[in-house]
Length: 397
Ligand SMILES: Cc1ncc(COP(=O)(O)O)c(C=O)c1O
Image (cartoon, rainbow, N blue to C red; front, side, top):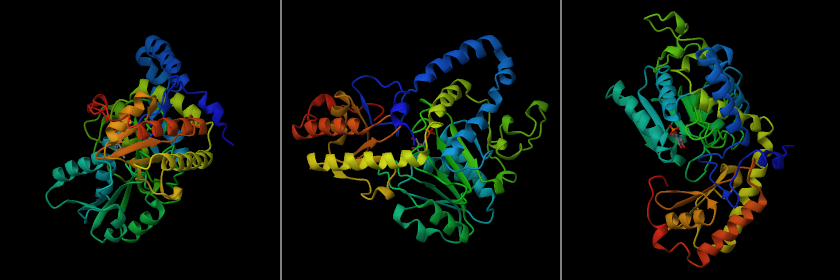
């Protein structure tokens, strides 16, 4: 059994704060600051450029990939970290399209994170006007997987509502139609158990700054199924994805397997922070995390519904259908969230009216949930959100 008291003690959470936004940015693992400082002093400082070999920096992107892979059911050697998630979406969809050269349609849904749609729109524009990004309602995805769809690109857990798509069923249906799948696991990795290998997913991408706690700007990851890894052509053919980067050939030859999905120089400082975060994940069993997350989200929903009648649940009521976050609709949700943050309960707001709360058992427990409900009830019952200072929109919501 995962010892959640032990994992909680490994995070540096500010006193008096109940942090319900680990679905957006995970908190600081206590060991990360020291690890990064040690890396800077002893490796960068002393080894200088020899650190790429001596300190093993060049192996970090795949080493971290394997550690993340354990949480999402990926085979060893199938994930590489680096770049941002938007970049990895581009890479995955571009390679997936090349596996289906006779088809020109990418199917996605209107619940997808906008950056995924923007990246594909940009990619398709550069490929030609015969390509189409088809966006349907999340509940209509299955019936729209038609024989002309080259790539099905979905975010498994909806960033606003937390609704989970059925990865296994949709992937099976896609394959039956000759369609390649690209799954965005931004709100899945570290939140719910994922079985990439047994679902036969083709490509998957995700970020490491949310539930994995790698820190702001932590690297993204990309998974390519072993059956595709040696034949996909990388659209972002950077030198570190080359078969032999240090021969400096003028012609690009893709590297072995997942190595070809590397692009350029990896962010070693950020990867060092992520490796400290993954040490905590090594102490956790994702099935325990899921069970505890369901307990916490159920407790939160029942507490809020009992005390805040103006808030309407925007997440699926069935815990099996939602990820590790709970969202409520409230017309003045932005102001209410600002009032909550002022009282030390940190969640976030997604336009037009979604108050979003993430539940992360590695460092959130029942006491935190009850404390958050009490403060939210006070703010709603006494209309404490109705103050001008809470209505000023900040750059990041
Ligand atoms: C589902 C999803 N996809 C893509 C992104 C974009 O990620 P990045 O800013 O790392 O490119 C996010 C960011 O939160 C996201 O939630």
